[in-house]
Every structure is written in structure tokens, then in C-alpha cells.
Image 1 (cartoon, rainbow, N blue to C red):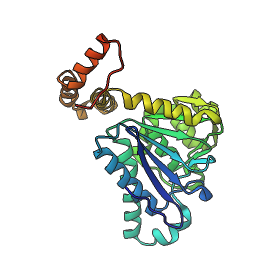
Image 2 (cartoon, rainbow, N blue to C red; image 1 turned 180 degrees about the vertical axis):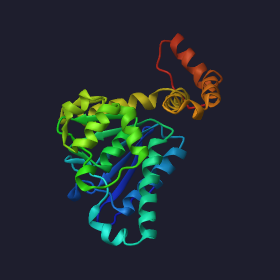
Image 3 (cartoon, helix red, strand yellow; image 1 turned 135 degrees about the vertical axis):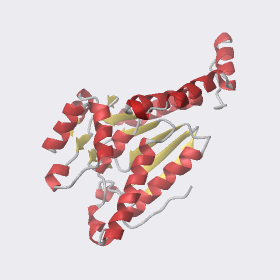
Image 4 (tube, rainbow, N blue to C red; image 1 turned 180 degrees about the horizontal axis):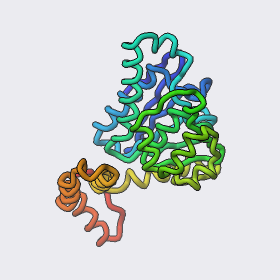
Length: 267
């Protein structure tokens, strides 16, 4: 995959040891995402989802002062100047956000600095959120008079519950990292100097584990959060049974007997 570098910023992608990394790179704008960046983010997620060599994806911001601050409003006058343009812009944002939320492999949001608006929505769409103590969170929609889509609100409720979700939206205030941890918005909170190591450790642990087992669990968790009439329990059972029929299951048993670390191939 290649980077794109529009004037307002770019999305950078890389892969190492089965871990894909996506970097939101526009630090001068607190990593606000332009239309081109939303589009490239959607492309990157589709490519990584199809890459069997990638077992975990880390999403982070560049510069240490922000994870992401949502859409780049400086280009709204030109990029949202007609109904057709608005539809195109919204489609690019929704494609990236939905692609992250439905990503078939584990995702980790590595958060430092400001995580605001659409940036907070991106973090919530990830499976795991690990933040530095300088992290700050806010969804300021009520201060701007803008609407917020049902899917984003629903995902936030799934993470923090309805009472906390209402507090976040109704007050539109900034929450510090300790508050975010207390409301279950974060999985882990670490010192700024240890954030990179903590995320690398988690990503490495995930990438070393059995991909089919992880995919099965992620599918079951996603179904558990759906309305009962929308759940595909047959697919969940099929994914579970596929684990027991896999070469990785045989490798796991053999490695346990031989008292060594298993080497899984996702088959």
C-alpha cells in the first residue's frame, strides 16, 4: 500500500510481524481528517482486512498531541458545497467508520492527546483502547448544533452504557484520561513514555495467538450486541467448530504437550 499526502495531511500505513499500523498524520490540525484522508483510511482498512498476513491493526495519531480530532472543518465550504458533495463526503466518512467497526481482526486505538468528535468515534469503533495520561476526550456535537448518527451513538453506548453516553453528549465537556478509564471508555491507561511499548506488547500478544479463535470470539461478541432477531448464531457456531477442525488446534495441543510456544498459521 502507498501513502497519500494531500496538503491537509495523509494516512500512513505499514505492516510488521503480522501487525498493521495506520497513522493519522496531520499534527498541525490535531490530526483532523480531510476528505482524502477519510477515503484513504477506508481503502487501507479494506486492504488490511483482506491481507491474511495481518492479524491485528493499531490506529494512532502522529505527533504525540492528538489521536484525531474528527473531520477537517476547514475544507467544508468547498467539499460540502452541494447536496451531492455532502453525500460523497458522508459516504467516505461512513465507509471508514463502518469499516473499522466491522473489521474482522482485532483493532487497537493508541491514544495520546486530544481524541475529539470523529476522533473519539474512531477510537470507540476499535476493539481495544489504550491511552496515555495526557489523553483528553470530548464529543462537542451539542456545542456545534450538529446531528450525530445512530450507529456512532449505539457504539458508544455499547462501550460506556447509556447514562455515560448521555453525559458525554449532553455536557459536550472534555474528560481527562482518569475519567475515561473510570467510565470504561479505556481498557488501559499508561504513562506517556510507556504508551508505545504497552500497545506493541498487546498487539504482539494478539498477533501470536490463534487467528481463527480470535475471529470466532469477535464474531460472537458482535452478535451478542445485536438485537436477538438479527443474530446469526449459526455463523457463530460454524466459526467455533472451524477452530476445532483447524491445523492451528492441532498445533496448539502439540505445543502444550511439548511445553513450547505454538506457531499459528490461521488455518
